Length: 451
Image (tube, rainbow, N blue to C red; front, side):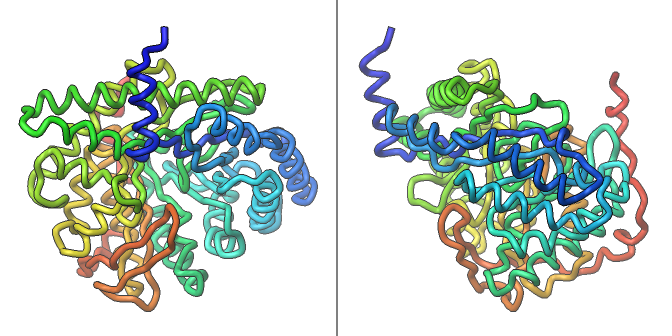
């Protein structure tokens, strides 16, 4: 039975506290599009995406109108293209252009899956795709890319880390006239998940159905507003408040996901309950941490407060929906979070503190802008450090870092929209080159032997 107070509370969340469905993402398998002739394969890819997703945007808009729930993005994820392109003997950039053309045809915001999984080593197709990433991201605006370089089960591919430092830098260089936006569409993972609806790291795993709908919910403003009503609560009560609020947010995601899946005639996958911030005032994870009691995000206590937040969000979401998945938790993308932008500007939030926070947050070092002259090997080492945190802690970690070509510490890069803006952050420039160029595989931890 519907409760009037619950309805009014949800309306308030949407109108005043920035509650939204951040994305409905259709995952599409392209395994049946494989062909040794790249032109035939690309045509199959284009036809399948256009057929499966032809009504995705329309259905999303219908649900927005009927329920009054903002759905910010409609997106597509596909099978990692390194698998689809492996049998072709020409540049995989043709697939990137095909994905771009299909995305524009069906009207989605972004399409993810220009990806490779190389946690234990490279196939020839993997290496070809990875080396093509800078060009692919430079000639497209909607295509996103990801590479998985490690896992708890396999260890960390240090050769892949070394290569990705160069690729990230090159992606920035090739898009320097577009504010180095190529690197903002590229994520390097450890323990990548196969049902992630959030860009830029989304791809459709080979173990997923042929086509599926996943939903990403966001509500930092709702959580902060709930906490603001309990100024004197102890930390256990704070956790309970976050859990109850997350429960309500997740129910909204369940409704939207189930409805979209039914109308599109595809299975409903998961709700990813992630507090994904935006640069908008009142929609910040950093401000939640400050509501908990920190003077400024980045001061001592930030990691503990974030651990509490992440845990409570997951517990509340699991109670609300039997299909929780993706990355669920709290994101900390610096350029996309108004509170983190402020903290980085004043020097309270540093790259080293962010790395510590990634041990307990939902993903990792996300949307961080660094000086454009940062050495490739330093970027590779940042990737390796983050992968090590993920590998040892059996969690997903990632690096989405943007070398701002021609800019230095204190300068600011501004993309606008959900990608936001942020200051160029200081990077420790002492060289890790000898370590990075040893190459090989960092062995998996002992607890990887569980079976």
